Amino acid sequence: MAGTYETVVNTALGRRLAAQLGLPRPARLRRYAVGAPLIDGPVLVGGHGDAPLAARTRVLLAAEGVEAIEAMDAEAPRSVAGVVADLSAVQSPADLESLRALVAPALRSLAPSGRVVVLGRRPEDAGSPAQAAARRALEGITRSVAKELRGGATANLVLVGEGADANADAALRFLLSGRSAYVDAQVVEVGDGTPAEPEDWNRPLAGKVAVVTGAARGIGAAIAGVLARDGATVVCVDLPAAGDALARTANQVGGTALQLDVTADDAGERILEHANTRHGGLDIVVHNAGITRDRLLANTDEQRWHSVLDVNLLSILRMNEALLREGGLRDGGHVVLVSSIAGIAGNRGQTNYAASKAGVIGLVRALGRDPELRRRGITVNAVAPGFIETEMTARVPFATREVGRLLNSLSQGGQPVDVAETIAWLAQDASAGVNGNVVRVCGQSLLGA
Image 1 (cartoon, rainbow, N blue to C red):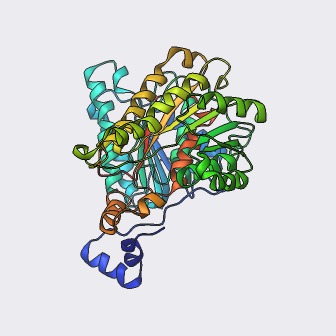
Image 2: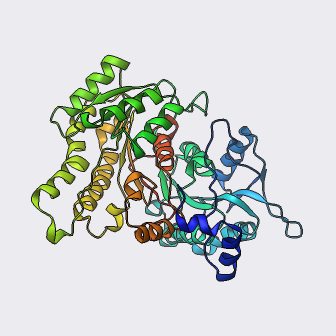
Image 3: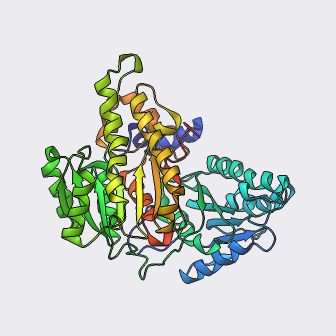
């Protein structure tokens, strides 16, 4: 749903006024459709030194029928749909000139909804202070470039661990594709793991069984829909009070419905029993259920405080005791939690909500390092949505809602499908090298880190 500002500024008169006054004009974002090409046009690929990740990128693009070019023609520049800059071999800040020389000439020719992806290594693994500085500089460059782009284009950074080059392909695919339409200025870390490419990239979750809590409507229903589109059988979970809406979602995605209060002590056991009995096992868990009970902290009573923490965080801990034990989630499975930009930046009147969503981030960081889960090949990641167009945000006061839509580099709110696409990517076996990450789906919100 478009906001009032977005609607007006895209009329003929609005376009003229926006140009005269230098106002932002939200672009129509390129979003994924089944069977669509990975990216709509040639991709400029280069880097510094031997650039091993650039070589892998060219192979990936060739397999998708996408042209990779090595340099821009200064006399006859051509439009490019994307730029991939491999800075994994930088040794000092002086080497960053290679990035400027590659990327800067291409930005004027970047197509609408274009993609800039920078590839590097983790600063923590650097062999010298100079190399650590150069590697850390890539984040500042990427976030700044993202704020300079127009026309719905995005820029993101992928930090690839030493020896994990083969694990970066799924992240690169996601960030180049329309699936990442509202993911901007993010840093994705890729480490060890054993990725498995799907037989069909249009159905990367074929044969998987997924559980989505809070699936009756909004973002939860969108998550269920995208997982099903990608091939998964989906168990849709929500409160008995949402039974009719839950049944509709389950019917639409060809899955099953489980009426359940996630705060119940036996919620995890019941989910596991349903998945095992009805579908033969469990591969993907999406902890999406959440509530708000907003008040300034000075006016927040114990019940409002506890209810939000219980649904949004404590219930996940309890359910995980059953879902993550041996005999629960299958080895090689994937857990994705829904956090929020409020858990990163805080939000006035949402201290309880921000606490719960920041707690989700802490939980993901801990579980991503858990030696037993790592041994079993289970990944745990989170998404942190920004302003997403839902029934809840539609009830926000008009002025606050319009400002919220514009407070990001893409100058518009995201759609529930944007959150769902990111979750579906993290749930792929091809993404096994992505673990312990928190990916903001916020269009590079101007709030938070």
